[in-house]
Length: 340
Image 1 (spheres, one colour):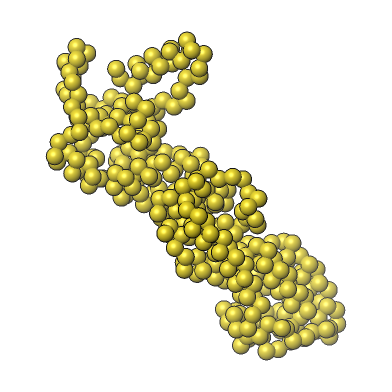
Image 2 (cartoon, rainbow, N blue to C red):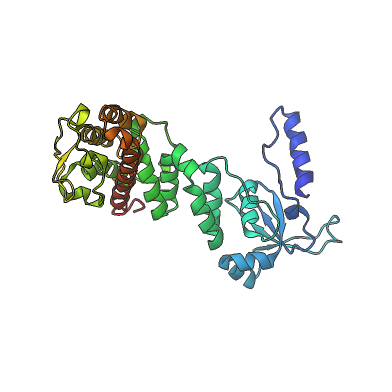
């Protein structure tokens, strides 16, 4: 029985029982009726995909070795199939039809549309199958898909758990860094995928987050850590005004090779606010937020000298600071083995 006939039969049976029909059906006609197919892949939910062995052999050394020693099973001719050449059947006992089809879409050359992903949970089972069947080219594509910006922003904890489960160290570190967007992961929504990671992995994630909260504020508030700032023409340094908000210029508490001089009070206030923001949320976005920039800029506008350049310079400085903060938290992430 082919996939379409079986689907109709299953639907009829389920309707008699009052149950809803299966939510997934094959979407790629090529895999249902390829006249050049010489292999059938059978998913765990009994969908069949007619594919060309040569393509599988090219993309997967596992399939190459499998076919070099003969197939795991042979189709038995019936009255319905006596006029059809026998096709070798390969059972895929852990993959659903949806997963097999998406994997094939990524394996096949030509005009096939690539699969779409509604969430990281769509990507992971296909990635796991690609790893299992050693389809390295597809693995690379799916590793990038797993840590896409959308998924990292919307579900960093889930991506972290999936990366650890698949033992993808770089992706786990990238996702760990993005969990810094969450102030308290203990109060976040329960993540089902956490059941697949160890207590040691979760402990290391907590330790990493704690270390970042300690280290990130030092990028702007500790000793020589501001050596990354090589500019000397910032308006808060150059200001010579004797009136307004800059009349009370004073030495900053930040010591670096470029700041052995007085700075405008409004800029020093920005740095203090940035330190507090990083202590609460150690990521670059924290120091570029309007809530951090606006109070300092409001004060800068009171100075006749600073007002013309304060907005541009503070945006540029905060952008550089954000890069340094993210660089610091990534350096810390690179010291952790989350997949042990």
